[in-house]
Image (cartoon, rainbow, N blue to C red; front, side, top):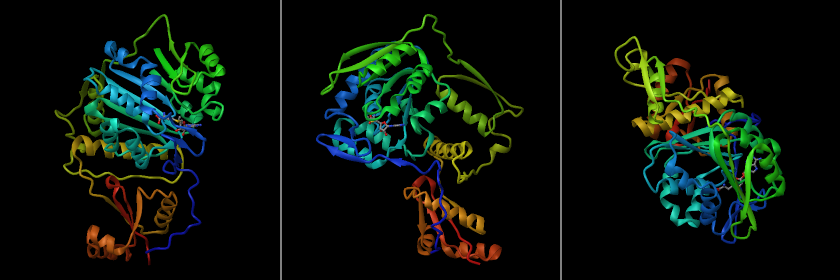
Amino acid sequence: MPQHNSNLKVNDHPLKVEHHKTTLDGGSIASKDYEDRYFQDNGFDESKEVYIDGNNLEERWESFTGSCFTVGELGFGLGLNFLTTMHCWLKKERPFDLDYIGIDKKILEKRNLVLLEEAFPNLKKEINIFKECDVVGHNGFECISIPHLKIRLILVTEDIQKAINDICISNIDAWFLDGFDPKKNPEMWTEDVLKAVFDLSSSDSSFSSFTSVGRIRRALLENGFEVKKVPGFGTKRHRIVGRKFEENKKSNEIKKIAILGAGLSGSNLAFNLANSNIEVDIYDALDDLSKGSSGGPIASMYPKFSLDNSPRSKFLIASYFFSLNFYIKTLGFENTGLLFYGSDETKDKWISKILTLKRDDLFELLSDDDLEDLLGVSQIKKSSACKKRTIPSTIRIKKEITRASLYKNHT
Ligand SMILES: C[S@@+](CC[C@H](N)C(=O)[O-])C[C@H]1O[C@@H](n2cnc3c(N)ncnc32)[C@H](O)[C@@H]1O
């Protein structure tokens, strides 16, 4: 097995993430970092009363006429509010989509879902749906589609200040403001953040929050929301709810789109837009989809992970995992894994740096025996020997959907 150089470090990277550090506090789950609870003892009832009913969601969904209703959450946390929303959404068939934009600087992991499963057996179905989504957990935007339920979850994993700048345009119909106690965690409740809540809202948006701190009430009011103080849930005396009212409601619903080119990109775009109830016309010189160079019978996907934290790096990671999930879930794409030949020093350095990300859920060093089990090592030795005279040593991307092996040059 190769000795990878531990001096090589990646300082900041979309796959280098922060985890929730949780502890049990009575009947609830608390954060060690913030010394505060994610929710009260009766978390499901709190989530339903404060956020779903606080935004009057179920009633509004009954009369909603748009093609997509968007919820925005400051503090996605362990996903309880998302699961409760899904629980209410699934009570009946809806004629429009639900987008849920969840902002948090920490990622949600499977072990967090196990905690929720124990605490909220009534959400078992929703938790299972969520588990099957194969959430990767990376900084930036991760889009998780559940098309048969008409749900799209967009996780924005960034510090709140960066997140509100990155979400430059949005049409949020209901906000869940759930960023821990404002006294303990003021950065989640700055004037900039509360202004962005208003700016990113649709014309008849609403909000609700567990808190009723005067400074926050005033800031929301100054930005243009009507704010109401109502009795709080459980141990809280008060909480706030509110609406944004605008005289001239403008509809910016897109009804029809023309796409030029029926290749892979054009077809994919058409598929996704059509699934969002948008009528699409595709124009192409050829008389059917993917008849040009996109029409090959075999396709493979190659993750171009770079090692910096640039927008390009974030885009490559987000788009790779999104596409992989999309092709697997929507088209039954079979992921057979990928081989990277670490045939020179640059590639070897790349492998070493990738390992310093400590994403054991994604990358794993393999022994030669593992490789033999995976691929049949003799074949690899033969093909690499004739080209570069390399002996393979191995790392693989462990997660089911991203299996790969990397080889180091021993010449
Ligand atoms: C009360 S918890 C949210 C609980 C969550 N809504 C749920 O349903 O599980 C508050 C969340 O705010 C997040 N948070 C705190 N400060 C933040 C910041 N500066 N930027 C982004 N997220 C932050 C924490 O990581 C935490 O998950």
